[in-house]
Amino acid sequence: MKGRVYLIGAGPGAPDLATLRAAEVLRRADVVFYDSLVHPDTLALASRAEKFAVGKRSGRRSTAQQFINKRLLDAVRRHDVVVRLKGGDPLLFGRAQEEIDALRRAGVDFEIVPGVTAATAAAAELGVSLTRRGLSRHVVFVTPRAAKGERANDWAAAVLAADTAVLYMGAGLAQSIVADLVARGMPGDTPVALVENASLPGRVAVVGTLSDLPELARLSGDGPVTVLFGEVLKESAATSDEIQALLKQA
Image (cartoon, rainbow, N blue to C red; front, side):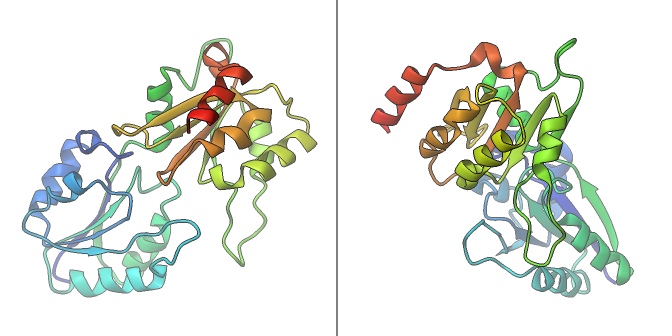
């Protein structure tokens, strides 16, 4: 193989939250395969590279993972610096392991460049620490989604066992999320927050309770949404009246 593949985390959205390492590699890149949530200004750092969109969005037509793997292998035979640019951190719900496995099987040299994940960006928007002495000693990152053919995803058990939980790719399932968690014993007044487009100018952050989650989800638009659960959110909780006012404005 001619070159090296870099699996890079672009961060949660804002271009200046990409790491210095990510920016340095992008400037050297010959070709970049990028996700749909990567900010245009982040992509613009790869000024000399060919660029190919290979993004995935829930509920929409997406690029097949096997096709992405093949493109990476084809590119590294011809180029020195091949970048797979992913939103957030590549090792959290980014299907990076499938690409890592394909590169290893082919004997390709690769490097992983971590990025800021949506969970910490969302917490920063809320001004809330995911951990807190005496209140939250463990945090779990989960997604309620499972692809066809995958083993059962008992995400709710992980949420119920944690002091603080962060749910990725779940806003569209708000009604069933509430039903599952309440049925398994989570109180309806558990503090919940929903953050859309964390770190970007158009961000939306609303806080309420588990029972409010479907209404909170109605406030979100087309951007990526992160849902947080836990007592660390309690001091920021909005009242139901405030939520209804927001819904009327939306």
